[in-house]
Amino acid sequence: MSDLYHPLILKHSREPLHFHERKDAEIILDAYNPICGDDYKIYLDLVDDHLEALSFDGYGCAVSKASASLLAQKLGGKSRGEAHKQLQRFLEMVTGSGTMIDEDLAVFAMAKKYPGRITCVTLAWQALDEFLSQHA
Amino acid sequence: MSENLVWDVDRIRADFPIFDRTPHIYLDNAATTHKPASVIKAITDFYEMHNANVHRGIYHLGSAASQRYAEARSTVADFIGAQASEIIFTAGCTDSINLVAFGLIDNKLSEGDTIVCLASEHHANLVPWQEVARRNNVQLKILHLTDLLDLDLTQAYSFIDRNTKLVAIAHTSNVTGARYPIEEVIAHSHKMGAMVLVDAAQALLSESVNVQDLGADFLAFSGHKMLGPTGCGVLYGRPEHLEQMQAIRFGGDMIRRVEYDQSTFAAAPRRFEAGTPPIAAVIGLAKAVDYINRVGVKAIADHSKALTVAAQELLTEEGFAVLGRPKHRGPILSFSHSRIHPHDLASILDERGIAIRAGHHCAQPFLKHLGLMATARVSFSLYNTHAEIESLGEGLRHAKALLL
Image 1: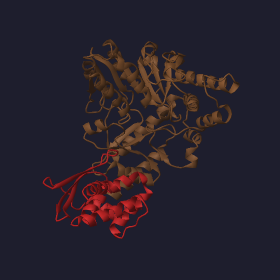
Image 2: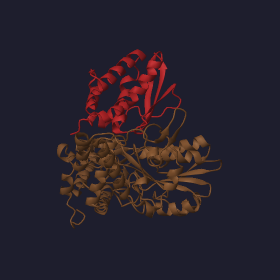
Image 3: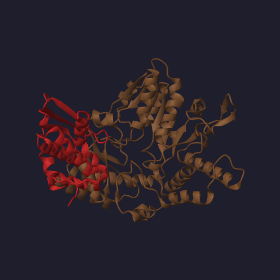
Image 4: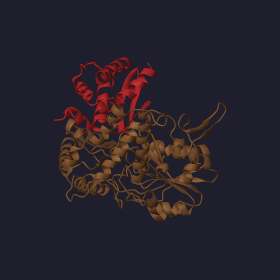
Protein backbone atom coordinates (compact mmCIF):
# COMPACT_ATOMS: atom_id res chain seq x y z
CA MET A 1 0.00 0.00 0.00
CA SER A 2 1.18 3.46 -0.83
CA ASP A 3 2.29 5.85 1.93
CA LEU A 4 1.69 8.92 -0.14
CA TYR A 5 -1.75 7.87 -1.29
CA HIS A 6 -3.36 7.61 2.12
CA PRO A 7 -7.08 6.72 1.91
CA LEU A 8 -7.99 10.21 3.10
CA ILE A 9 -5.91 11.79 0.33
CA LEU A 10 -7.52 9.50 -2.24
CA LYS A 11 -10.98 10.35 -0.89
CA HIS A 12 -10.38 14.09 -1.11
CA SER A 13 -8.87 13.81 -4.57
CA ARG A 14 -11.85 11.86 -5.90
CA GLU A 15 -14.44 14.00 -4.16
CA PRO A 16 -12.84 17.30 -3.21
CA LEU A 17 -14.75 19.53 -0.78
CA HIS A 18 -15.57 23.16 -1.56
CA PHE A 19 -14.46 22.52 -5.14
CA HIS A 20 -16.23 25.20 -7.12
CA GLU A 21 -15.56 28.41 -8.93
CA ARG A 22 -16.73 31.70 -7.42
CA LYS A 23 -16.02 34.58 -9.73
CA ASP A 24 -17.55 37.20 -7.41
CA ALA A 25 -15.30 36.28 -4.48
CA GLU A 26 -13.70 39.22 -2.72
CA ILE A 27 -10.30 37.59 -2.98
CA ILE A 28 -9.11 35.22 -5.70
CA LEU A 29 -5.66 33.68 -5.30
CA ASP A 30 -3.56 31.83 -7.87
CA ALA A 31 -1.92 28.59 -6.81
CA TYR A 32 0.19 27.68 -9.82
CA ASN A 33 3.17 25.37 -10.07
CA PRO A 34 5.10 26.11 -13.27
CA ILE A 35 7.12 22.91 -12.88
CA CYS A 36 4.17 20.56 -13.26
CA GLY A 37 1.37 22.80 -14.51
CA ASP A 38 -0.91 22.33 -11.52
CA ASP A 39 -3.12 25.39 -11.51
CA TYR A 40 -5.79 26.23 -8.94
CA LYS A 41 -7.72 29.30 -7.95
CA ILE A 42 -8.66 29.85 -4.32
CA TYR A 43 -11.74 31.95 -3.56
CA LEU A 44 -12.58 33.62 -0.25
CA ASP A 45 -14.25 36.60 1.37
CA LEU A 46 -12.91 38.36 4.44
CA VAL A 47 -15.90 38.93 6.75
CA ASP A 48 -15.14 40.41 10.19
CA ASP A 49 -11.57 39.27 9.70
CA HIS A 50 -12.66 35.68 9.09
CA LEU A 51 -12.01 33.53 5.98
CA GLU A 52 -15.51 32.93 4.69
CA ALA A 53 -16.85 30.95 1.70
CA LEU A 54 -13.40 29.42 1.12
CA SER A 55 -13.44 27.32 -2.05
CA PHE A 56 -11.15 26.37 -4.89
CA ASP A 57 -11.18 24.97 -8.39
CA GLY A 58 -8.70 24.12 -11.09
CA TYR A 59 -6.47 21.33 -12.30
CA GLY A 60 -3.84 19.22 -10.63
CA CYS A 61 -2.72 15.88 -9.26
CA ALA A 62 -4.48 13.85 -6.58
CA VAL A 63 -2.10 15.11 -3.89
CA SER A 64 -2.40 18.82 -4.67
CA LYS A 65 -6.17 18.54 -5.06
CA ALA A 66 -6.63 16.68 -1.76
CA SER A 67 -4.43 19.16 0.04
CA ALA A 68 -6.41 22.11 -1.37
CA SER A 69 -9.65 20.38 -0.42
CA LEU A 70 -8.46 19.92 3.17
CA LEU A 71 -7.27 23.51 3.26
CA ALA A 72 -10.75 24.70 2.33
CA GLN A 73 -12.33 22.36 4.86
CA LYS A 74 -10.03 23.15 7.76
CA LEU A 75 -9.42 26.87 7.34
CA GLY A 76 -12.83 28.01 6.04
CA GLY A 77 -14.60 30.11 8.70
CA LYS A 78 -11.43 30.56 10.78
CA SER A 79 -10.21 33.97 11.86
CA ARG A 80 -7.35 35.35 9.86
CA GLY A 81 -4.90 34.95 12.73
CA GLU A 82 -5.98 31.41 13.57
CA ALA A 83 -5.94 30.35 9.91
CA HIS A 84 -2.47 31.75 9.43
CA LYS A 85 -1.21 29.99 12.54
CA GLN A 86 -2.59 26.62 11.46
CA LEU A 87 -1.35 27.12 7.95
CA GLN A 88 2.18 27.81 9.06
CA ARG A 89 2.11 24.83 11.37
CA PHE A 90 1.08 22.70 8.40
CA LEU A 91 3.88 24.04 6.19
CA GLU A 92 6.36 23.43 9.00
CA MET A 93 5.18 19.86 9.37
CA VAL A 94 5.56 19.14 5.67
CA THR A 95 8.84 20.92 5.08
CA GLY A 96 10.50 20.72 8.48
CA SER A 97 10.18 19.03 11.80
CA GLY A 98 6.82 20.28 13.07
CA THR A 99 3.95 17.99 14.03
CA MET A 100 0.26 18.41 13.55
CA ILE A 101 -2.47 17.98 16.10
CA ASP A 102 -5.13 17.72 13.42
CA GLU A 103 -5.19 14.03 12.47
CA ASP A 104 -6.48 14.63 8.96
CA LEU A 105 -3.74 17.09 8.13
CA ALA A 106 -1.13 14.86 9.74
CA VAL A 107 -1.47 12.37 6.85
CA PHE A 108 0.50 14.80 4.72
CA ALA A 109 3.55 14.34 6.94
CA MET A 110 4.35 11.39 4.65
CA ALA A 111 5.26 13.88 1.93
CA LYS A 112 8.64 14.30 3.62
CA LYS A 113 9.59 10.93 2.20
CA TYR A 114 8.75 12.19 -1.31
CA PRO A 115 10.77 15.35 -1.87
CA GLY A 116 9.54 15.54 -5.45
CA ARG A 117 5.95 15.85 -4.24
CA ILE A 118 6.24 18.39 -1.41
CA THR A 119 5.25 21.22 -3.72
CA CYS A 120 2.05 19.31 -4.55
CA VAL A 121 1.17 19.19 -0.85
CA THR A 122 2.01 22.82 -0.17
CA LEU A 123 0.74 24.45 -3.38
CA ALA A 124 -2.61 25.83 -2.11
CA TRP A 125 -1.28 26.43 1.40
CA GLN A 126 1.63 28.47 0.15
CA ALA A 127 -0.66 30.64 -1.97
CA LEU A 128 -2.85 31.41 1.05
CA ASP A 129 0.21 31.88 3.27
CA GLU A 130 1.58 34.46 0.87
CA PHE A 131 -1.69 36.36 0.92
CA LEU A 132 -2.07 36.25 4.70
CA SER A 133 1.55 37.29 5.24
CA GLN A 134 1.12 40.28 2.96
CA HIS A 135 -2.14 41.29 4.60
CA ALA A 136 -1.33 40.51 8.20
CA MET B 1 27.89 -7.60 -30.10
CA SER B 2 26.69 -6.45 -33.51
CA GLU B 3 27.76 -9.73 -35.07
CA ASN B 4 25.55 -11.63 -32.63
CA LEU B 5 22.22 -12.66 -34.03
CA VAL B 6 20.49 -12.70 -30.65
CA TRP B 7 20.37 -9.52 -28.60
CA ASP B 8 21.77 -10.46 -25.22
CA VAL B 9 20.23 -7.83 -22.99
CA ASP B 10 21.62 -9.43 -19.82
CA ARG B 11 25.12 -9.00 -21.18
CA ILE B 12 24.35 -5.38 -21.98
CA ARG B 13 22.91 -4.74 -18.54
CA ALA B 14 26.03 -6.18 -16.93
CA ASP B 15 27.93 -3.28 -18.52
CA PHE B 16 25.91 -0.74 -16.51
CA PRO B 17 26.97 -0.76 -12.81
CA ILE B 18 23.96 1.27 -11.67
CA PHE B 19 21.66 -1.74 -12.13
CA ASP B 20 23.73 -3.69 -9.60
CA ARG B 21 24.07 -0.90 -7.10
CA THR B 22 20.55 0.50 -7.33
CA PRO B 23 18.12 -1.98 -8.85
CA HIS B 24 15.35 -0.15 -10.68
CA ILE B 25 13.47 0.00 -13.93
CA TYR B 26 14.69 3.03 -15.82
CA LEU B 27 12.28 4.35 -18.43
CA ASP B 28 13.50 7.95 -18.61
CA ASN B 29 16.25 7.57 -21.17
CA ALA B 30 15.15 10.65 -23.07
CA ALA B 31 16.16 12.71 -20.02
CA THR B 32 19.53 11.04 -19.65
CA THR B 33 20.89 7.55 -20.18
CA HIS B 34 22.85 5.47 -17.71
CA LYS B 35 26.59 5.04 -18.26
CA PRO B 36 28.50 1.87 -19.01
CA ALA B 37 31.43 0.90 -16.78
CA SER B 38 33.89 1.66 -19.58
CA VAL B 39 32.79 5.31 -19.65
CA ILE B 40 32.96 5.66 -15.86
CA LYS B 41 36.36 3.99 -15.84
CA ALA B 42 37.69 6.27 -18.59
CA ILE B 43 36.76 9.27 -16.46
CA THR B 44 38.27 7.95 -13.22
CA ASP B 45 41.36 6.72 -15.12
CA PHE B 46 41.86 10.18 -16.48
CA TYR B 47 41.82 11.74 -13.04
CA GLU B 48 43.80 8.93 -11.42
CA MET B 49 46.47 8.49 -14.05
CA HIS B 50 46.43 11.13 -16.77
CA ASN B 51 45.17 14.34 -15.24
CA ALA B 52 46.57 17.51 -16.77
CA ASN B 53 45.23 20.53 -18.61
CA VAL B 54 45.16 20.54 -22.40
CA HIS B 55 46.96 22.79 -24.92
CA ARG B 56 49.58 23.86 -22.37
CA GLY B 57 51.92 21.28 -21.00
CA ILE B 58 55.38 20.73 -22.32
CA TYR B 59 55.58 17.94 -19.79
CA HIS B 60 54.47 14.45 -20.64
CA LEU B 61 51.13 14.40 -18.80
CA GLY B 62 50.08 17.63 -20.43
CA SER B 63 50.82 16.57 -23.96
CA ALA B 64 49.22 13.17 -23.32
CA ALA B 65 46.03 14.88 -22.09
CA SER B 66 46.02 17.12 -25.17
CA GLN B 67 46.43 14.07 -27.36
CA ARG B 68 43.57 12.21 -25.65
CA TYR B 69 41.37 15.26 -26.03
CA ALA B 70 42.22 15.47 -29.74
CA GLU B 71 41.60 11.75 -30.23
CA ALA B 72 38.23 12.09 -28.52
CA ARG B 73 37.32 14.82 -31.00
CA SER B 74 38.17 12.53 -33.91
CA THR B 75 36.17 9.65 -32.42
CA VAL B 76 33.07 11.81 -31.96
CA ALA B 77 33.50 13.40 -35.38
CA ASP B 78 33.80 9.99 -37.08
CA PHE B 79 30.64 8.87 -35.31
CA ILE B 80 28.55 11.45 -37.19
CA GLY B 81 30.54 11.44 -40.42
CA ALA B 82 32.24 14.78 -39.75
CA GLN B 83 35.83 16.06 -39.73
CA ALA B 84 37.43 16.71 -36.34
CA SER B 85 37.77 20.40 -37.23
CA GLU B 86 33.99 20.63 -37.63
CA ILE B 87 33.26 19.51 -34.05
CA ILE B 88 33.04 21.95 -31.17
CA PHE B 89 32.83 20.66 -27.63
CA THR B 90 30.29 22.61 -25.63
CA ALA B 91 28.65 22.31 -22.23
CA GLY B 92 25.71 20.47 -23.79
CA CYS B 93 23.05 20.64 -26.48
CA THR B 94 21.56 23.87 -25.10
CA ASP B 95 24.98 25.49 -25.14
CA SER B 96 25.55 24.30 -28.73
CA ILE B 97 22.31 25.89 -29.90
CA ASN B 98 23.07 29.14 -28.08
CA LEU B 99 26.42 29.31 -29.82
CA VAL B 100 24.80 29.22 -33.25
CA ALA B 101 22.04 31.61 -32.17
CA PHE B 102 24.32 34.28 -30.71
CA GLY B 103 27.58 33.59 -32.53
CA LEU B 104 26.13 33.52 -36.04
CA ILE B 105 22.43 34.10 -36.56
CA ASP B 106 22.28 37.15 -34.26
CA ASN B 107 24.78 38.87 -36.58
CA LYS B 108 23.10 37.84 -39.79
CA LEU B 109 19.52 38.96 -39.34
CA SER B 110 18.07 41.99 -41.01
CA GLU B 111 14.61 43.47 -41.37
CA GLY B 112 12.08 41.10 -42.91
CA ASP B 113 14.04 37.96 -42.11
CA THR B 114 12.33 35.15 -40.23
CA ILE B 115 13.35 32.20 -38.11
CA VAL B 116 11.27 29.03 -38.26
CA CYS B 117 10.82 26.68 -35.33
CA LEU B 118 8.77 23.52 -35.09
CA ALA B 119 5.86 23.69 -32.62
CA SER B 120 7.15 20.75 -30.61
CA GLU B 121 10.68 22.02 -30.06
CA HIS B 122 12.33 21.56 -26.69
CA HIS B 123 12.76 24.89 -24.87
CA ALA B 124 16.47 24.58 -25.73
CA ASN B 125 15.65 24.90 -29.43
CA LEU B 126 12.95 27.52 -28.99
CA VAL B 127 13.92 30.04 -26.31
CA PRO B 128 17.33 31.00 -27.85
CA TRP B 129 15.55 31.74 -31.15
CA GLN B 130 12.86 33.76 -29.38
CA GLU B 131 15.61 35.82 -27.83
CA VAL B 132 17.54 36.28 -31.08
CA ALA B 133 14.30 37.23 -32.88
CA ARG B 134 13.37 39.71 -30.16
CA ARG B 135 16.78 41.40 -30.19
CA ASN B 136 16.75 41.76 -33.95
CA ASN B 137 13.10 42.61 -34.21
CA VAL B 138 12.41 39.78 -36.65
CA GLN B 139 9.60 37.26 -36.65
CA LEU B 140 9.89 33.79 -35.13
CA LYS B 141 7.43 31.64 -37.05
CA ILE B 142 6.08 28.46 -35.45
CA LEU B 143 5.40 25.58 -37.81
CA HIS B 144 2.52 23.62 -36.33
CA LEU B 145 2.08 19.87 -36.68
CA THR B 146 -0.68 17.73 -38.15
CA ASP B 147 -3.42 16.10 -36.06
CA LEU B 148 -1.15 13.04 -35.85
CA LEU B 149 1.55 15.35 -34.44
CA ASP B 150 3.76 14.81 -37.45
CA LEU B 151 5.31 17.33 -39.76
CA ASP B 152 3.40 18.06 -42.96
CA LEU B 153 5.93 18.63 -45.69
CA THR B 154 3.59 20.50 -48.01
CA GLN B 155 2.90 22.93 -45.22
CA ALA B 156 6.59 23.13 -44.35
CA TYR B 157 7.44 23.91 -47.99
CA SER B 158 5.10 26.87 -48.08
CA PHE B 159 6.10 27.98 -44.61
CA ILE B 160 9.87 28.05 -45.17
CA ASP B 161 10.39 30.75 -47.79
CA ARG B 162 13.02 33.14 -49.12
CA ASN B 163 12.73 35.30 -45.98
CA THR B 164 13.65 32.38 -43.74
CA LYS B 165 17.17 32.73 -42.42
CA LEU B 166 17.23 29.70 -40.17
CA VAL B 167 15.13 26.63 -39.50
CA ALA B 168 15.46 25.08 -36.02
CA ILE B 169 14.14 21.55 -35.95
CA ALA B 170 14.50 18.46 -33.81
CA HIS B 171 15.55 15.24 -35.46
CA THR B 172 13.31 13.36 -33.00
CA SER B 173 10.79 14.98 -30.68
CA ASN B 174 11.55 14.49 -27.00
CA VAL B 175 7.82 14.70 -26.31
CA THR B 176 6.17 12.41 -28.87
CA GLY B 177 9.20 10.57 -30.21
CA ALA B 178 8.26 11.67 -33.76
CA ARG B 179 11.19 11.30 -36.13
CA TYR B 180 10.62 14.22 -38.48
CA PRO B 181 11.44 14.16 -42.21
CA ILE B 182 14.37 16.50 -41.70
CA GLU B 183 16.17 15.46 -44.90
CA GLU B 184 13.34 16.96 -46.96
CA VAL B 185 13.13 20.03 -44.74
CA ILE B 186 16.87 20.60 -45.14
CA ALA B 187 16.78 20.20 -48.93
CA HIS B 188 13.88 22.65 -49.23
CA SER B 189 15.42 25.13 -46.79
CA HIS B 190 18.66 25.18 -48.74
CA LYS B 191 16.73 25.90 -51.93
CA MET B 192 15.24 28.90 -50.14
CA GLY B 193 18.66 30.00 -48.91
CA ALA B 194 17.96 29.16 -45.26
CA MET B 195 20.27 27.39 -42.86
CA VAL B 196 19.06 24.46 -40.77
CA LEU B 197 20.03 23.59 -37.22
CA VAL B 198 19.11 20.04 -36.25
CA ASP B 199 18.61 19.31 -32.57
CA ALA B 200 19.85 15.73 -32.47
CA ALA B 201 19.62 15.32 -28.69
CA GLN B 202 17.29 12.33 -29.07
CA ALA B 203 18.74 11.00 -32.30
CA LEU B 204 22.03 9.28 -31.85
CA LEU B 205 20.90 6.02 -30.29
CA SER B 206 17.86 5.60 -32.49
CA GLU B 207 19.62 5.63 -35.87
CA SER B 208 23.02 6.25 -37.28
CA VAL B 209 23.35 9.92 -38.12
CA ASN B 210 25.67 11.14 -40.83
CA VAL B 211 25.96 14.88 -41.27
CA GLN B 212 27.08 14.52 -44.88
CA ASP B 213 23.97 12.53 -45.79
CA LEU B 214 21.70 14.84 -43.83
CA GLY B 215 23.25 17.99 -45.24
CA ALA B 216 22.46 19.87 -42.04
CA ASP B 217 24.25 23.15 -41.50
CA PHE B 218 24.44 22.53 -37.77
CA LEU B 219 23.84 19.49 -35.61
CA ALA B 220 23.64 19.84 -31.84
CA PHE B 221 23.60 17.12 -29.22
CA SER B 222 24.45 16.24 -25.63
CA GLY B 223 26.80 13.52 -24.48
CA HIS B 224 24.75 12.42 -21.49
CA LYS B 225 21.80 11.26 -23.57
CA MET B 226 24.07 8.84 -25.44
CA LEU B 227 25.75 6.99 -22.56
CA GLY B 228 28.31 9.71 -21.95
CA PRO B 229 28.78 11.95 -18.92
CA THR B 230 26.95 15.20 -18.23
CA GLY B 231 28.70 18.49 -18.81
CA CYS B 232 29.71 18.05 -22.39
CA GLY B 233 27.92 18.31 -25.68
CA VAL B 234 28.74 18.81 -29.30
CA LEU B 235 28.08 21.29 -32.04
CA TYR B 236 28.79 20.19 -35.58
CA GLY B 237 28.90 23.01 -38.10
CA ARG B 238 29.74 23.15 -41.76
CA PRO B 239 33.22 24.67 -42.12
CA GLU B 240 32.03 27.69 -44.11
CA HIS B 241 29.59 28.55 -41.31
CA LEU B 242 32.11 27.97 -38.53
CA GLU B 243 34.47 30.35 -40.30
CA GLN B 244 31.85 33.09 -40.14
CA MET B 245 30.64 32.27 -36.64
CA GLN B 246 31.96 34.53 -33.89
CA ALA B 247 32.93 33.48 -30.42
CA ILE B 248 30.44 34.27 -27.67
CA ARG B 249 32.78 33.28 -24.84
CA PHE B 250 36.19 34.87 -24.64
CA GLY B 251 39.35 34.09 -22.73
CA GLY B 252 42.18 31.63 -22.74
CA ASP B 253 42.58 28.88 -25.34
CA MET B 254 40.42 30.63 -27.95
CA ILE B 255 43.01 33.27 -28.84
CA ARG B 256 45.86 33.57 -31.29
CA ARG B 257 47.66 36.72 -30.13
CA VAL B 258 46.64 38.87 -27.16
CA GLU B 259 47.68 42.45 -26.52
CA TYR B 260 46.38 44.87 -23.93
CA ASP B 261 44.17 46.71 -26.39
CA GLN B 262 43.12 43.94 -28.75
CA SER B 263 43.37 40.25 -29.58
CA THR B 264 43.10 37.95 -32.50
CA PHE B 265 41.31 34.64 -32.25
CA ALA B 266 42.08 31.05 -33.10
CA ALA B 267 40.44 29.17 -35.95
CA ALA B 268 37.46 26.85 -35.37
CA PRO B 269 36.97 24.76 -33.32
CA ARG B 270 39.37 26.30 -30.76
CA ARG B 271 37.83 29.76 -31.18
CA PHE B 272 34.67 28.41 -29.56
CA GLU B 273 36.27 26.54 -26.68
CA ALA B 274 37.43 29.29 -24.34
CA GLY B 275 38.88 28.24 -21.02
CA THR B 276 39.70 24.75 -19.81
CA PRO B 277 37.29 22.36 -21.50
CA PRO B 278 35.55 19.47 -19.69
CA ILE B 279 38.47 17.19 -20.58
CA ALA B 280 37.43 14.11 -18.62
CA ALA B 281 33.84 14.39 -19.86
CA VAL B 282 35.00 14.64 -23.46
CA ILE B 283 37.17 11.55 -23.01
CA GLY B 284 34.17 9.83 -21.40
CA LEU B 285 31.98 10.79 -24.35
CA ALA B 286 34.49 9.29 -26.78
CA LYS B 287 34.42 6.10 -24.71
CA ALA B 288 30.62 6.12 -24.95
CA VAL B 289 30.92 6.36 -28.72
CA ASP B 290 33.33 3.40 -28.70
CA TYR B 291 30.80 1.43 -26.69
CA ILE B 292 27.93 2.35 -29.02
CA ASN B 293 30.03 1.41 -32.05
CA ARG B 294 30.91 -1.92 -30.50
CA VAL B 295 27.27 -2.80 -29.79
CA GLY B 296 26.07 -1.20 -33.01
CA VAL B 297 23.64 1.69 -33.42
CA LYS B 298 21.32 -0.42 -35.53
CA ALA B 299 21.14 -3.19 -32.94
CA ILE B 300 20.41 -0.63 -30.21
CA ALA B 301 17.78 1.07 -32.36
CA ASP B 302 16.06 -2.20 -33.29
CA HIS B 303 15.90 -3.31 -29.66
CA SER B 304 14.54 0.05 -28.46
CA LYS B 305 12.04 0.10 -31.30
CA ALA B 306 10.66 -3.33 -30.38
CA LEU B 307 10.20 -2.15 -26.78
CA THR B 308 8.47 1.01 -27.94
CA VAL B 309 6.01 -0.95 -30.05
CA ALA B 310 5.26 -3.28 -27.13
CA ALA B 311 4.83 -0.37 -24.72
CA GLN B 312 2.50 1.42 -27.12
CA GLU B 313 0.28 -1.65 -27.29
CA LEU B 314 0.30 -1.96 -23.51
CA LEU B 315 -0.59 1.68 -22.91
CA THR B 316 -3.47 1.56 -25.37
CA GLU B 317 -4.77 -1.68 -23.86
CA GLU B 318 -4.69 -0.11 -20.39
CA GLY B 319 -6.74 2.86 -21.55
CA PHE B 320 -4.01 5.48 -21.80
CA ALA B 321 -3.91 7.84 -24.78
CA VAL B 322 -0.54 7.84 -26.54
CA LEU B 323 0.31 11.30 -27.80
CA GLY B 324 0.56 11.49 -31.58
CA ARG B 325 0.77 8.95 -34.35
CA PRO B 326 3.77 10.09 -36.38
CA LYS B 327 4.86 8.09 -39.40
CA HIS B 328 8.22 7.32 -37.82
CA ARG B 329 8.91 7.24 -34.13
CA GLY B 330 12.02 7.02 -31.98
CA PRO B 331 11.97 5.13 -28.65
CA ILE B 332 9.84 7.73 -26.84
CA LEU B 333 6.12 7.68 -25.94
CA SER B 334 4.11 10.35 -24.14
CA PHE B 335 0.74 9.35 -22.78
CA SER B 336 -2.10 10.58 -20.65
CA HIS B 337 -5.29 9.48 -18.97
CA SER B 338 -8.35 11.67 -18.52
CA ARG B 339 -8.62 10.85 -14.81
CA ILE B 340 -5.05 10.10 -13.75
CA HIS B 341 -2.62 12.95 -13.32
CA PRO B 342 0.85 12.11 -14.69
CA HIS B 343 2.55 13.08 -11.42
CA ASP B 344 0.39 10.68 -9.44
CA LEU B 345 1.17 7.96 -11.94
CA ALA B 346 4.90 8.68 -11.76
CA SER B 347 4.83 8.57 -7.93
CA ILE B 348 2.91 5.31 -7.84
CA LEU B 349 5.26 3.72 -10.38
CA ASP B 350 8.23 5.09 -8.45
CA GLU B 351 7.07 3.20 -5.37
CA ARG B 352 7.41 0.07 -7.50
CA GLY B 353 10.89 1.05 -8.59
CA ILE B 354 9.88 2.26 -12.03
CA ALA B 355 11.25 5.61 -13.16
CA ILE B 356 9.14 7.46 -15.72
CA ARG B 357 8.97 11.13 -16.58
CA ALA B 358 5.95 13.31 -15.86
CA GLY B 359 5.58 16.95 -16.73
CA HIS B 360 5.81 19.26 -19.70
CA HIS B 361 9.09 17.78 -20.98
CA CYS B 362 10.54 21.25 -21.54
CA ALA B 363 7.93 21.91 -24.21
CA GLN B 364 5.40 24.08 -22.37
CA PRO B 365 3.89 25.90 -25.36
CA PHE B 366 3.49 22.65 -27.28
CA LEU B 367 1.56 20.93 -24.49
CA LYS B 368 -0.50 24.07 -23.91
CA HIS B 369 -1.34 24.15 -27.63
CA LEU B 370 -2.54 20.55 -27.32
CA GLY B 371 -4.64 21.48 -24.30
CA LEU B 372 -2.47 19.46 -21.92
CA MET B 373 -0.78 20.61 -18.73
CA ALA B 374 1.48 17.59 -18.43
CA THR B 375 1.92 14.06 -19.76
CA ALA B 376 3.65 10.93 -18.61
CA ARG B 377 6.53 9.72 -20.76
CA VAL B 378 8.46 6.50 -21.16
CA SER B 379 11.61 6.24 -23.25
CA PHE B 380 13.71 3.19 -23.93
CA SER B 381 17.32 2.32 -24.46
CA LEU B 382 19.57 -0.64 -25.06
CA TYR B 383 19.38 -2.04 -21.52
CA ASN B 384 15.58 -2.07 -21.15
CA THR B 385 13.75 -5.38 -21.31
CA HIS B 386 10.36 -6.77 -22.23
CA ALA B 387 10.00 -7.96 -18.63
CA GLU B 388 10.29 -4.31 -17.56
CA ILE B 389 7.38 -3.45 -19.82
CA GLU B 390 5.37 -6.17 -18.13
CA SER B 391 6.22 -4.57 -14.78
CA LEU B 392 5.12 -1.24 -16.20
CA GLY B 393 1.80 -2.89 -17.10
CA GLU B 394 1.35 -4.14 -13.54
CA GLY B 395 2.19 -0.67 -12.25
CA LEU B 396 -0.36 0.95 -14.55
CA ARG B 397 -3.06 -1.45 -13.37
CA HIS B 398 -2.13 -0.78 -9.77
CA ALA B 399 -2.34 2.98 -10.32
CA LYS B 400 -5.77 2.62 -11.92
CA ALA B 401 -7.01 0.48 -9.01
CA LEU B 402 -5.72 3.06 -6.54
CA LEU B 403 -6.83 6.26 -8.22
CA LEU B 404 -9.98 5.45 -10.19
